[in-house]
Image (cartoon, rainbow, N blue to C red; front, side):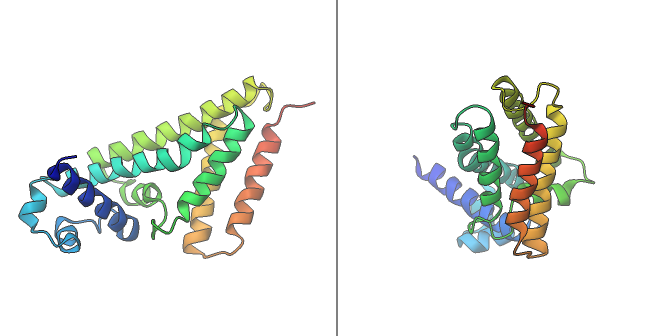
Length: 198
């Protein structure tokens, strides 16, 4: 890796940590330059605008989410084991100490829901892709005989994500010590409702 690429990776890693703590709006070229002990002009050589920095940082966050949550979960046996692994790994992602503000995409969704532009469009694309991945996992669970054939997989994905969002809210904002147990119970109920009838 060249020195320029190493510097860029260091910038994105720091931006990821700052955005996790302060949100996208808290991620500025000035604050990042200060954190890295770089000049703003040196940082500007890598990212020409705050928007470009935000987009690259979100791509980094997406890559890390796939590496820590989806890829390991999708190596589990097909069907229900994958669904359970996604639920558990996603819950761990939200409580990872390296994400002091929780899931960056939850924060970005709240920050950007009423705005237009490429950063919002990227977050929307990532959230749609995630819902599609969950629906696809549910479809595979139907094929494996774990879920009933008439299951609405898009509704399943909607409710699955809803459980995660409720967990994130209860864990991070309400600091509810029962948040993880409640989330696990909710997933168990959702899975039981989707289960193939014997």
